Image 1 (cartoon, rainbow, N blue to C red):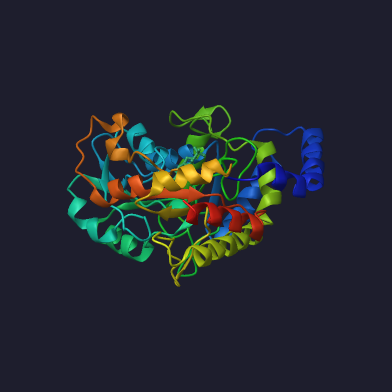
Image 2 (image 1 turned 45 degrees about the horizontal axis):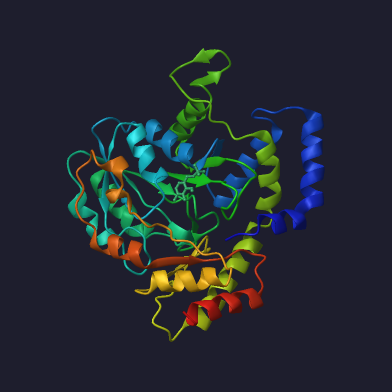
Length: 358
Ligand SMILES: Cc1ncc(COP(=O)(O)O)c(C=O)c1O
């Protein structure tokens, strides 16, 4: 689905030189590259603070702790996402309340949030799924009205924008993942929290480093969740290219949309007021399994993100969940095709031939 080797080859001399320099400087934990990357990312996102951590999962967990979300609280989110979104809710003892999705953007359906709000609701986690920004103005307005904390799950949306504002800097906090296959990916695990809130930032910094703001003084029980210095070296180099990478992904998605138009497939929406950065290019079709087999038969990769929505996962069997008809239908019909900046027009055409020939 991605060409990690190809991307490394293109940046090899820059990355190798920078890694060798960091190795010789031998400052491996919260060193100068983590600090510089945090500042560069804050500037890029237009956020007051950016705090590196060990993974996207931790980037969701730590702000929930900092916001005081606790056992028995309810957090509204989508079931059409990777499990980490809701795992983080369970880590703090809170209960995920899953709301159905919009059939076109595949993000949380904001018209269904109000009916899911109870006197226990404390937060909303919208996910900018596949790089498509969720409807943040509507989410913010519901949150302000009910006094809820908004944590954006930006694991798949680095560089995407909603009405000219970068995702991750719109809600109370944003959680990013640098898992290798993400649009901005490192060579291992990594994550980052963005926020404009000084208190959330202060607490997240403490939680990520053993509950400590000063060495050997521990205010709370925290975690070992620091962004690795060597990963920060790689991320600083890739950050300089992220807009170019995202532009290339958009162009590939536009080619896919053009070549697949007129078929019975539902191709992704590209709204005028949002900069979708196509972490995934995901089609919907009633013939999903047939198309998948035809694509695989031509030795082309494809994937189903996500075959079992979270409200139907065993891991959430202990929480009461309502049926989610759109989510369930989309899980049965979705298929993601390869998309990455290095992909050529011929490769896109070959994928489309396989899809249309199914
Ligand atoms: C939507 C979403 N949220 C959270 C995560 C968790 O990120 P990580 O794998 O870096 O912990 C991912 C990563 O796969 C994701 O896709």
